Length: 117
Ligand SMILES: [Fe+2]
Image 1: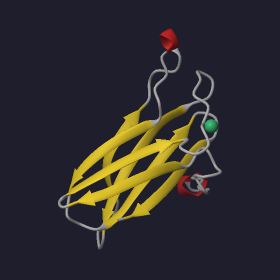
Image 2: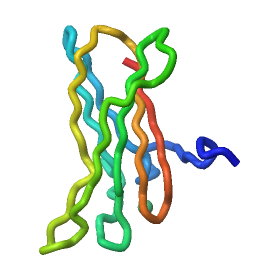
Image 3: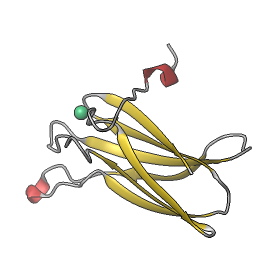
Image 4: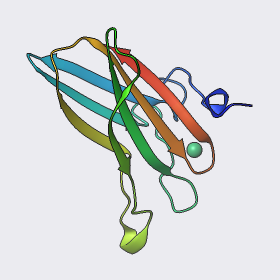
């Protein structure tokens, strides 16, 4: 099986693992927010949490998705501090295209979503 075949998806309104994308273009700036658990909260404990989110953007006609950023969540209960699986990214581009998000839960693996802008 290929790694890509292991990536899960679904409706973020009912499946808590699916990364939710809010992307908005203002002139030559693309503002992107990605979070896990907007509608259905995902557990955020030492035993069960979101480890990371990666964000990509593929411009229309582009050859492949360009990695915008990788965000690793490191606090999982130390001193009662918990990183929330939520990130903001800003990209300078005038291109239309597709924003992709990939996230990883330590118990439930890889999840993806995309949004066209
Ligand atoms: Fe999970």
